[in-house]
Length: 50
Image (cartoon, rainbow, N blue to C red; front, side):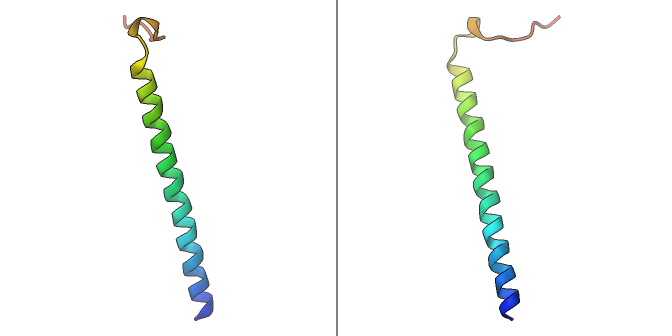
């Protein structure tokens, strides 16, 4: 029973770490989007459409 509890605790710790990584990635993505949108459109390097 103790081994099962240990595995469950490890699983929960790993899941918390993954959730934190996902939250950080979402934050970084939102920050990059805000920064991009704040830049003057004439200064953006955007590929020209044919």
